[in-house]
Image 1 (cartoon, rainbow, N blue to C red):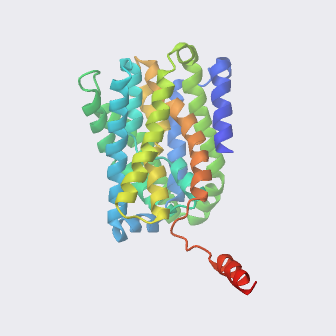
Image 2: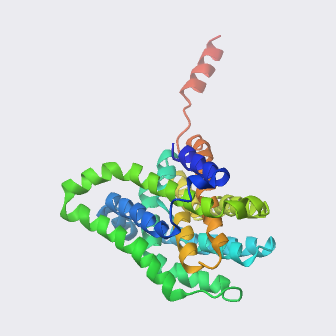
Image 3: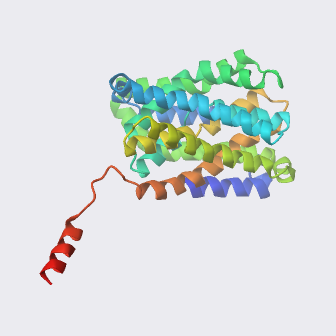
Length: 317
């Protein structure tokens, strides 16, 4: 449902821009704040307890998140000679933490949901420091990056709404529980509006731009899955943890990337495009990963009853 909704909105905004032009670009960060507040409502103390109980898994996931994706973003941007605005957008996607979409896809893939939530929470908590720092390191020779503005924006649209949602569940459990029931549809609506805004306001540029930006975004996501899977496997994790880490690394909070781009790189509107494209694509690839991972369960013992029964029948015959 999420994939189809986001994809439909993106296509409408791309080919009928007027359908999304009524949404002001200044709304993006507020819409993102709504998404983060909804995420905060779903967080529990036990989610953070996992970081203490199993620090190795969470740290590996967080390090992979903030090393692999930024490195891939920079390498792909340079390899395909992206113009500065698109390079900035791809770099922002790479430098952002994981998003709630990764938790949903992990759950549907029968992965370790606790690990996914822990890595998302930890990477989001570190985002105000690491996202501006990584973006600055990647773009310092190409574009001027306002570190202070980026830090402030992340604090306002990510940390504060997330913390408010989390605190609300502690102080007003009944109210928070009722709000949490509505959070998924509200968050989905906010994400669709973000995608519609970015694509509608840049529809002409996106349609006329080279297909390279789409290739880079798709490769960024797929290579993120590949390296996430590889690192998790080399770390000796179980299949459920491998699923969680693979998805966590490959799927980014691309809505945050679009919001930051529209604020920090306001003079380059196309900088928000990679985040919007990523938002659409990773829902498509996420659905594919669900189908693959639901069938991949190497930790489950093989059911030999049928085989042994077949052998017994054969021997008796």
